[in-house]
Image (cartoon, rainbow over all chains, first blue to last red; front, side):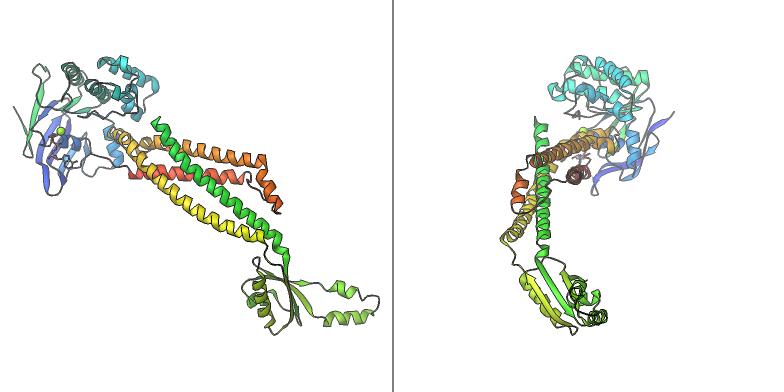
Length: 223
Length: 270
Ligand SMILES: Nc1ncnc2c1ncn2[C@@H]1O[C@H](COP(=O)(O)OP(=O)(O)O)[C@@H](O)[C@H]1O
Ligand SMILES: [Mg+2]
């Protein structure tokens, strides 16, 4: 099986004195569904940041999609990011863009034609039950709706890897349900590799999943 | 509405700068035109025994720009009827040379006197005749106006630079978030910056259209030219196509520079 992520002695830090993740070793196969748990402040978001190249490894090596993340060149990073879909805890939607255009962002960046993009956005907005809100702006939507938009955006370009940071953190049940269904669907139907940081793993999840826990700077698998 | 306001502040800053520049250009042009009028209001005539080269004159004083030999033939011609051909030739040979000396700028009477004295000290020069009219009031006023407008221009540049820097911070704040989000999905720098450049270009176009329009109207209306003509200055307030090109280029360079500063200053937050 292809490895999507390989970490060898991965050390992450924001400054020299304080390491957040210390010499972690793990690998993730293509098509896996991974839950990441851990106490608040343990470094879950930090790990995700390293996976999309917002924080480079201080020591060791981290390979994502075959690309070494340590000292990665800007061009290479841009290219890699076009194959990753990220869902942030704080949504990170573009305020001055409509819902429709926000979902289209990865397609615009990749350079899809207008027709293809519009069809794809239409399909995804239907999936997240927000088709009727397409022309609105993010601030006109509830938190749960905004996160569903972010979910649609993360899926729009059929990424090989989805990184989601507490995507259902403080959402209503309905929105949480929609998001779990989409993550599950992407993994089972499209074989997309999914990493989700969460506080509790939903019981009904039918996917085959792995569970990593982060504590005191180390990452270990929970069986 | 908010974005319109932001447009407005950059456009206002650009318009102020362009307007100041054009006024400065017009003042400069008026002074030059007036100086051109005055140029013939002074003369220094030098009498020399032998041939003096142009470069000999240049050595005497650094403000001397040229010296042209005056042809004495019309003086000699006036003796034609009374003198024999041979004597005329002799006269021509013994007659001293006359030069008209020109300075590199329009001199004050005091300056002319100084140069004349220096010329006289030269062993070959036997006589210097000078004539200068005092600088008139209009010329003095023009010079004063130039000084005032220079100070004014400096002040306006300082203020508008501050305005633009403030604008830059607003832009940075406004666009940073969007540019960061785009970067997270792998947008290259040019794509992230496209909106900024579009804004900058639109503002530059609007500002230069407005300022050029104003000066075009001033020329059409003709009031200012009439006033300047009254003091003997024929000056082009707005030269086509040079002036609009200069103004537009300045507007573009400034606003593109602003956009590039914003982009250079945008930090990727993690
Ligand atoms: N940008 C940053 N600069 C410095 N320290 C940070 C930064 N982001 C997070 N940290 C610190 O790193 C640790 C892990 O944070 P984070 O990965 O956000 O935890 P969580 O597991 O809750 O997502 C925390 O102690 C936090 O204070
Ligand atoms: Mg976190």
